[in-house]
Length: 94
Image (cartoon, one colour):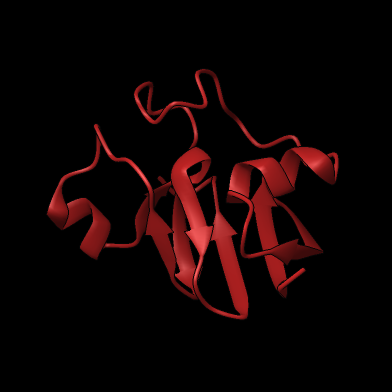
């Protein structure tokens, strides 16, 4: 496992967990009982949008976000794979 540090901010609560670069940010949140919002898990519904404040990700698919929104740090957590060793994701700030 390629381990990384991921901090999620959901409903004003910050939780830091050990993640894996081979799993999406949403899957890691679910596995760690973090109540991150989602619906379709296919990158089409926009329910899981969050703002990446620290770190970088690779979006596997993107049907929703514009290039400008991505430049501002918005991501779709169900399609985002970490590419840095530390991430801070604020799902309240979208």
